[in-house]
Length: 120
Image (tube, rainbow, N blue to C red; front, top):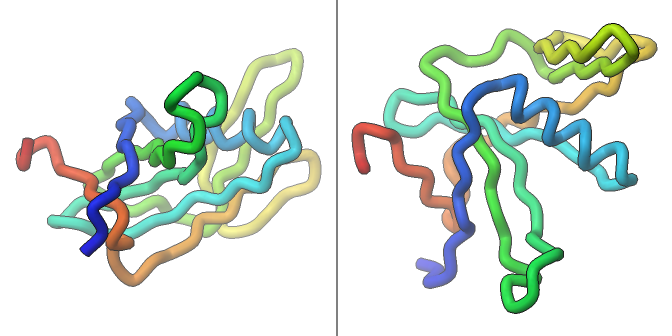
């Protein structure tokens, strides 16, 4: 087992996860969302490396949400324009939208250790 773990940061909702993924893509980074099940919950999240804070440079972080039901779709679509922002799941990409693939994992990776609210 690995001694080092990723720092887990739980987000409030799917819209926050989509907004975060969109912000990564807008800076030129590749972004995707991973999904796996743990203890009856659906965990969706983005792995990234913390790069902007002194001695914490290079620390891996996992921004995630925990849902009772799985998202219906294989992409999270994001559209931001002068009317506001829209974040929604989809089974395909669409022209004019940023599409973030949702990658299905068989199980939680060994370097993650997301705890359900009930387990804390």
